[in-house]
Length: 106
Length: 179
Image (tube, rainbow over all chains, first blue to last red; front, side, top):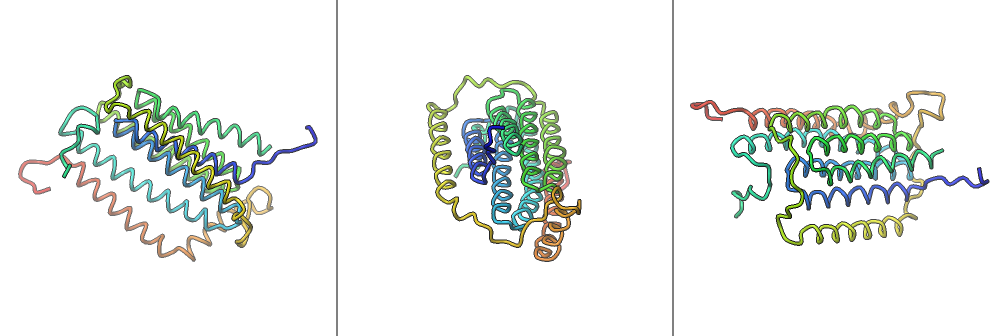
Protein backbone atom coordinates (compact mmCIF):
# COMPACT_ATOMS: atom_id res chain seq x y z
CA UNK A 1 0.00 0.00 0.00
CA UNK A 2 2.66 2.45 1.05
CA UNK A 3 5.50 0.25 -0.04
CA UNK A 4 5.97 -0.78 3.57
CA UNK A 5 4.15 -3.73 5.08
CA UNK A 6 4.22 -3.88 8.85
CA UNK A 7 4.11 -7.44 10.11
CA UNK A 8 3.37 -7.95 13.80
CA UNK A 9 6.38 -9.44 15.49
CA UNK A 10 6.17 -11.94 18.37
CA UNK A 11 6.82 -9.04 20.76
CA UNK A 12 3.46 -7.52 19.81
CA UNK A 13 1.66 -10.71 20.73
CA UNK A 14 3.59 -10.97 23.97
CA UNK A 15 2.77 -7.40 24.94
CA UNK A 16 -0.90 -8.02 24.17
CA UNK A 17 -0.86 -11.07 26.37
CA UNK A 18 0.87 -9.10 29.15
CA UNK A 19 -1.91 -6.52 29.00
CA UNK A 20 -4.54 -9.26 29.03
CA UNK A 21 -2.91 -10.93 32.03
CA UNK A 22 -2.82 -7.63 33.91
CA UNK A 23 -6.47 -6.93 33.18
CA UNK A 24 -7.33 -10.35 34.57
CA UNK A 25 -5.24 -9.75 37.69
CA UNK A 26 -6.87 -6.38 38.31
CA UNK A 27 -10.26 -8.04 37.87
CA UNK A 28 -9.46 -10.61 40.54
CA UNK A 29 -8.41 -7.77 42.83
CA UNK A 30 -11.39 -5.46 42.37
CA UNK A 31 -14.39 -7.72 41.80
CA UNK A 32 -16.12 -9.33 44.76
CA UNK A 33 -18.42 -11.71 42.92
CA UNK A 34 -16.79 -15.17 42.99
CA UNK A 35 -18.08 -16.04 39.52
CA UNK A 36 -16.64 -12.89 37.97
CA UNK A 37 -13.35 -13.48 39.78
CA UNK A 38 -13.31 -16.93 38.24
CA UNK A 39 -13.83 -15.46 34.79
CA UNK A 40 -10.85 -13.17 35.42
CA UNK A 41 -8.75 -16.23 36.24
CA UNK A 42 -9.80 -17.62 32.85
CA UNK A 43 -8.57 -14.38 31.27
CA UNK A 44 -5.16 -14.87 32.86
CA UNK A 45 -5.02 -18.49 31.70
CA UNK A 46 -5.78 -17.40 28.16
CA UNK A 47 -3.05 -14.78 28.28
CA UNK A 48 -0.59 -17.49 29.24
CA UNK A 49 -1.85 -19.72 26.43
CA UNK A 50 -1.30 -16.92 23.94
CA UNK A 51 2.23 -16.51 25.25
CA UNK A 52 2.95 -20.21 24.82
CA UNK A 53 1.70 -20.26 21.24
CA UNK A 54 3.61 -17.10 20.36
CA UNK A 55 6.89 -18.28 21.81
CA UNK A 56 6.36 -21.69 20.24
CA UNK A 57 6.00 -20.10 16.83
CA UNK A 58 8.91 -17.73 17.34
CA UNK A 59 11.14 -20.65 18.27
CA UNK A 60 9.52 -22.85 15.64
CA UNK A 61 8.77 -25.53 18.20
CA UNK A 62 5.53 -27.52 18.31
CA UNK A 63 5.88 -28.22 22.04
CA UNK A 64 4.47 -24.78 22.84
CA UNK A 65 1.17 -25.86 21.32
CA UNK A 66 1.30 -29.23 23.08
CA UNK A 67 1.61 -27.45 26.44
CA UNK A 68 -1.34 -25.21 25.59
CA UNK A 69 -3.37 -28.34 24.92
CA UNK A 70 -2.64 -29.63 28.42
CA UNK A 71 -3.31 -26.21 29.96
CA UNK A 72 -6.75 -26.25 28.34
CA UNK A 73 -7.53 -29.68 29.76
CA UNK A 74 -6.42 -28.67 33.25
CA UNK A 75 -8.39 -25.42 32.96
CA UNK A 76 -11.54 -27.37 32.11
CA UNK A 77 -11.08 -29.59 35.17
CA UNK A 78 -10.33 -26.54 37.31
CA UNK A 79 -13.49 -24.76 36.18
CA UNK A 80 -15.60 -27.80 36.99
CA UNK A 81 -14.17 -28.16 40.50
CA UNK A 82 -14.25 -24.43 41.20
CA UNK A 83 -17.85 -24.02 40.11
CA UNK A 84 -18.77 -27.08 42.20
CA UNK A 85 -17.23 -25.42 45.24
CA UNK A 86 -19.00 -22.14 44.51
CA UNK A 87 -22.35 -23.90 44.09
CA UNK A 88 -21.97 -25.79 47.36
CA UNK A 89 -20.98 -22.60 49.22
CA UNK A 90 -23.78 -20.53 47.74
CA UNK A 91 -26.33 -23.17 48.53
CA UNK A 92 -25.97 -22.71 52.26
CA UNK A 93 -25.73 -18.94 52.25
CA UNK A 94 -27.33 -16.32 50.12
CA UNK A 95 -25.41 -13.34 48.89
CA UNK A 96 -22.54 -13.43 46.50
CA UNK A 97 -19.61 -11.70 48.10
CA UNK A 98 -16.25 -13.24 48.80
CA UNK A 99 -15.71 -10.82 51.68
CA UNK A 100 -18.36 -12.72 53.64
CA UNK A 101 -16.55 -16.03 53.29
CA UNK A 102 -14.15 -15.63 56.15
CA UNK A 103 -14.92 -18.78 58.08
CA UNK A 104 -11.74 -20.55 57.04
CA UNK A 105 -9.65 -17.66 58.26
CA UNK A 106 -7.04 -18.88 60.71
CA UNK B 1 -2.94 -8.71 6.25
CA UNK B 2 -1.54 -10.21 9.43
CA UNK B 3 -1.41 -6.69 10.84
CA UNK B 4 -5.10 -6.19 10.11
CA UNK B 5 -6.00 -9.51 11.72
CA UNK B 6 -3.82 -8.72 14.73
CA UNK B 7 -5.38 -5.30 15.28
CA UNK B 8 -8.94 -6.56 14.96
CA UNK B 9 -8.34 -9.54 17.24
CA UNK B 10 -6.54 -7.35 19.77
CA UNK B 11 -9.48 -4.99 19.91
CA UNK B 12 -11.80 -7.96 20.44
CA UNK B 13 -9.59 -9.35 23.21
CA UNK B 14 -9.15 -6.08 25.07
CA UNK B 15 -12.76 -4.92 24.78
CA UNK B 16 -13.93 -8.30 26.01
CA UNK B 17 -11.46 -8.35 28.88
CA UNK B 18 -12.42 -4.86 30.01
CA UNK B 19 -16.06 -5.88 29.71
CA UNK B 20 -15.46 -8.80 32.06
CA UNK B 21 -14.16 -6.58 34.82
CA UNK B 22 -16.39 -3.53 34.30
CA UNK B 23 -19.80 -5.01 33.51
CA UNK B 24 -22.14 -5.01 36.49
CA UNK B 25 -24.22 -7.95 35.36
CA UNK B 26 -22.53 -11.39 35.65
CA UNK B 27 -24.24 -12.59 32.47
CA UNK B 28 -22.85 -9.65 30.53
CA UNK B 29 -19.42 -10.38 31.96
CA UNK B 30 -19.68 -13.99 30.76
CA UNK B 31 -20.68 -12.82 27.27
CA UNK B 32 -17.72 -10.42 27.22
CA UNK B 33 -15.56 -13.39 28.13
CA UNK B 34 -16.83 -15.12 24.96
CA UNK B 35 -15.63 -12.14 22.92
CA UNK B 36 -12.18 -12.37 24.45
CA UNK B 37 -12.00 -16.12 23.87
CA UNK B 38 -12.93 -15.72 20.21
CA UNK B 39 -10.27 -13.05 19.82
CA UNK B 40 -7.70 -15.41 21.28
CA UNK B 41 -8.86 -18.10 18.85
CA UNK B 42 -8.35 -15.69 15.94
CA UNK B 43 -4.83 -14.97 17.20
CA UNK B 44 -4.18 -18.71 17.36
CA UNK B 45 -5.20 -19.08 13.73
CA UNK B 46 -2.99 -16.13 12.80
CA UNK B 47 -0.09 -17.96 14.40
CA UNK B 48 -0.85 -21.20 12.54
CA UNK B 49 -2.19 -23.08 15.56
CA UNK B 50 -5.41 -24.15 13.87
CA UNK B 51 -6.16 -27.13 16.05
CA UNK B 52 -5.82 -25.10 19.24
CA UNK B 53 -8.12 -22.44 17.79
CA UNK B 54 -10.79 -25.08 17.21
CA UNK B 55 -10.31 -26.46 20.72
CA UNK B 56 -10.45 -22.94 22.11
CA UNK B 57 -13.82 -22.29 20.50
CA UNK B 58 -15.27 -25.66 21.43
CA UNK B 59 -13.94 -26.05 24.97
CA UNK B 60 -13.69 -22.47 26.21
CA UNK B 61 -16.34 -20.55 24.33
CA UNK B 62 -18.59 -23.57 24.15
CA UNK B 63 -18.32 -25.63 27.29
CA UNK B 64 -16.77 -23.40 29.95
CA UNK B 65 -18.82 -20.27 29.30
CA UNK B 66 -21.99 -22.35 29.11
CA UNK B 67 -21.01 -23.80 32.48
CA UNK B 68 -20.58 -20.30 33.87
CA UNK B 69 -23.95 -19.18 32.56
CA UNK B 70 -25.53 -22.35 33.88
CA UNK B 71 -24.17 -21.74 37.37
CA UNK B 72 -25.22 -18.08 37.27
CA UNK B 73 -28.76 -19.13 36.45
CA UNK B 74 -28.71 -22.02 38.92
CA UNK B 75 -27.67 -19.79 41.80
CA UNK B 76 -30.07 -17.06 40.77
CA UNK B 77 -27.43 -14.35 40.95
CA UNK B 78 -28.33 -12.96 37.56
CA UNK B 79 -28.90 -9.45 38.80
CA UNK B 80 -26.68 -6.42 38.48
CA UNK B 81 -24.44 -5.66 41.41
CA UNK B 82 -23.81 -2.20 42.66
CA UNK B 83 -20.24 -1.45 41.73
CA UNK B 84 -20.33 1.97 43.39
CA UNK B 85 -19.80 0.49 46.82
CA UNK B 86 -16.14 -0.06 47.46
CA UNK B 87 -15.74 -2.76 50.10
CA UNK B 88 -12.25 -1.79 51.12
CA UNK B 89 -11.33 1.85 51.01
CA UNK B 90 -8.79 2.72 48.37
CA UNK B 91 -8.66 -0.84 47.09
CA UNK B 92 -9.49 0.04 43.49
CA UNK B 93 -6.83 2.72 43.21
CA UNK B 94 -4.22 0.38 44.58
CA UNK B 95 -5.41 -2.39 42.26
CA UNK B 96 -5.17 -0.02 39.30
CA UNK B 97 -1.66 0.99 40.27
CA UNK B 98 -0.71 -2.67 40.69
CA UNK B 99 -2.17 -3.46 37.27
CA UNK B 100 -0.32 -0.63 35.57
CA UNK B 101 2.88 -1.68 37.30
CA UNK B 102 2.33 -5.25 36.16
CA UNK B 103 1.82 -4.10 32.56
CA UNK B 104 5.00 -2.03 32.77
CA UNK B 105 7.09 -4.79 34.26
CA UNK B 106 5.85 -7.51 31.91
CA UNK B 107 6.27 -5.28 28.86
CA UNK B 108 9.79 -4.39 29.90
CA UNK B 109 10.62 -8.03 30.43
CA UNK B 110 9.13 -9.04 27.08
CA UNK B 111 10.83 -6.28 25.11
CA UNK B 112 14.21 -6.74 26.74
CA UNK B 113 14.05 -10.51 26.33
CA UNK B 114 12.89 -10.50 22.72
CA UNK B 115 16.32 -11.41 21.37
CA UNK B 116 16.01 -14.79 23.11
CA UNK B 117 13.24 -15.68 20.66
CA UNK B 118 15.27 -17.17 17.89
CA UNK B 119 14.59 -20.22 15.83
CA UNK B 120 15.52 -23.26 17.81
CA UNK B 121 13.05 -26.07 17.21
CA UNK B 122 12.32 -28.46 14.40
CA UNK B 123 9.83 -26.24 12.65
CA UNK B 124 6.06 -25.92 12.75
CA UNK B 125 4.05 -27.27 9.86
CA UNK B 126 1.37 -24.84 8.79
CA UNK B 127 -1.91 -26.11 7.48
CA UNK B 128 -2.42 -23.03 5.33
CA UNK B 129 0.86 -22.75 3.50
CA UNK B 130 1.58 -26.42 3.01
CA UNK B 131 -0.34 -28.66 0.68
CA UNK B 132 -1.21 -31.01 3.53
CA UNK B 133 -4.33 -29.59 5.16
CA UNK B 134 -3.85 -31.59 8.36
CA UNK B 135 -0.22 -30.69 8.91
CA UNK B 136 -0.77 -28.85 12.19
CA UNK B 137 -2.96 -31.59 13.67
CA UNK B 138 -0.56 -34.33 12.61
CA UNK B 139 2.44 -32.60 14.06
CA UNK B 140 0.66 -31.85 17.33
CA UNK B 141 -0.56 -35.43 17.56
CA UNK B 142 2.96 -36.71 16.99
CA UNK B 143 4.13 -34.55 19.87
CA UNK B 144 1.32 -35.39 22.29
CA UNK B 145 1.09 -39.11 21.61
CA UNK B 146 4.82 -39.76 21.60
CA UNK B 147 6.68 -37.27 23.78
CA UNK B 148 3.89 -36.49 26.19
CA UNK B 149 1.90 -39.69 26.18
CA UNK B 150 2.38 -40.23 29.91
CA UNK B 151 1.15 -36.72 30.71
CA UNK B 152 -1.78 -37.39 28.40
CA UNK B 153 -2.72 -40.52 30.34
CA UNK B 154 -2.39 -38.71 33.68
CA UNK B 155 -4.74 -36.07 32.28
CA UNK B 156 -7.49 -38.65 31.98
CA UNK B 157 -7.03 -39.53 35.66
CA UNK B 158 -7.26 -35.82 36.47
CA UNK B 159 -10.53 -35.51 34.61
CA UNK B 160 -12.04 -38.52 36.38
CA UNK B 161 -10.97 -37.13 39.76
CA UNK B 162 -12.46 -33.73 38.89
CA UNK B 163 -15.79 -35.23 37.84
CA UNK B 164 -16.10 -37.45 40.92
CA UNK B 165 -15.04 -34.63 43.23
CA UNK B 166 -17.55 -32.24 41.74
CA UNK B 167 -20.37 -34.74 42.05
CA UNK B 168 -19.47 -35.20 45.72
CA UNK B 169 -19.19 -31.46 46.31
CA UNK B 170 -22.36 -30.36 44.64
CA UNK B 171 -24.52 -33.23 45.87
CA UNK B 172 -27.36 -32.31 48.12
CA UNK B 173 -26.95 -34.04 51.46
CA UNK B 174 -29.79 -36.40 52.24
CA UNK B 175 -29.98 -36.66 56.01
CA UNK B 176 -28.49 -39.99 56.99
CA UNK B 177 -25.89 -40.40 54.27
CA UNK B 178 -22.31 -39.67 55.19
CA UNK B 179 -21.36 -37.62 52.18
